[in-house]
Amino acid sequence: MKKHLFFALFAFAALAFSACNKNKPDPVYVDLGLPSGTLWKSENESTQVGRDKGIYTFDEAVETFGDQLPTIAQWRELVSECEWKHEIGYTVVGPNGNSITLTTYPATRYCNGNIDNGSSHRARYWSSTEAQRYSEEEERKALYLYVDWDSNQDKIILMTDPGEVCGAILVRLVK
Image (cartoon, rainbow, N blue to C red; front, side, top):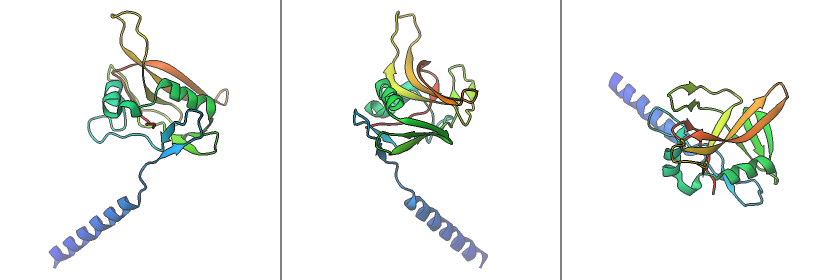
């Protein structure tokens, strides 16, 4: 009797879990009304393996996503053409009123292995653009979008910076 009850409960739980997953919408690409026509994915990419769930090194991101990784020009367009609101993460509202939310978690892993566990206001996202190197000896870097909230000035800080390609940060795709 106990065996039958256990299996019945197990089957019910599996069926309920399956039904919940079917109701979860697939991520979509959102038209923000940008001049370039770039569509931005509604959520970040997440890794299902390895120690860094949700963050990628530059080489992993380029190898995995190729031309779906935004260029630094596409990030700059998003910064200049959209309204940014600091809420839970950042809501980015396009010229046509459609929006996406850029999350600030999970953490950033630096090349030395140190972890920045993130906060409710800071995020880094890879672009597909490598930073210019002035000599072969210079360390290879790639450009990323850095977003932060300056509570002293009550404003959002948006800039593009070069980052070490061995660090792991967030990824958002475009098409």
